[in-house]
Length: 235
Length: 124
Image 1 (spheres, one colour):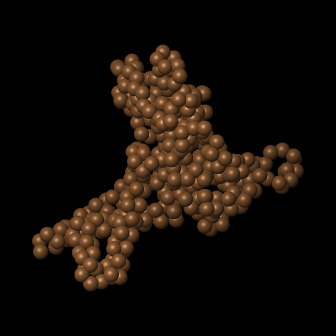
Image 2: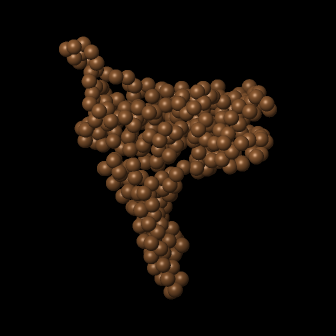
Image 3: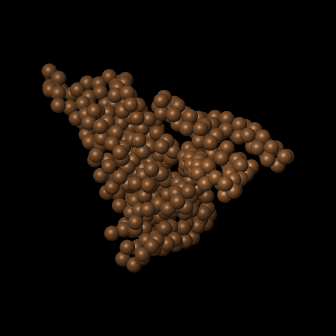
């Protein structure tokens, strides 16, 4: 089948604004959008720029807007989106070139969540790992799946309004550590999240959950953190 | 260097979010609608006289009433859903179903309001 692929293009050395270029590509319904991009880059237009790495939905490099929704190009098939495909960079971040955006503000917000285990207590007597029951692990299992692709954060209208807002991905990271029984930094993180640019800016638009390629219940995780801030309890 | 990050209203509205995104937008329109009603009402009372009565006619108009009812009812029902889900975050797993229930409550209620407004406004 022949598909029409309309791609957002922006070259910082030449353009003052972005434009769209349309390509006609012969594709199989089971081809991925990433395959189309690779084909166009390899055969038609070598200047086309986009991020990709593992190409199997694990690294999270190729988040982009495909037919108006945030998705990973390596996880969407042509048959899922039809013959007319529009590919644009994710919203709310500066476009560096074509489909490549500046992820720095995103990772700045991620780092604010102290994304590492905080535990100053002495090690158990045997000097080995801090044990955790399966139930304790299950409490934050879902939020460990985040691959930091930014699909959730860049689908969030509150983030579009201000990149100072920490955004859903940062909050998912915070959730992952706050509810980890081995971690002792929950109160620090909850204090950070209670700030002006924190959790209060989540207006439950639910776009983040729909955008997540790992099917994490992002809004639910944020809701649990909101409740922890309100009650001061982590259970 | 890079193309600026601002997301215009039209770009934002074109994002194909799920049901929750539509309710997010309508919630804001609802809030603005009610703010307009209150502003016009206060203005009419403040000015008074013929001009005040003229402004009164704007929000007593059936079309404006239908709009304001939409705003107030949707804002209230959607706000109730958000509050409930905020209080019981485990229910957020069923957010899509909650949105369907919200529409199932809103549509007949608003339909009834609209019927009353139209039959009163147009029927005399």
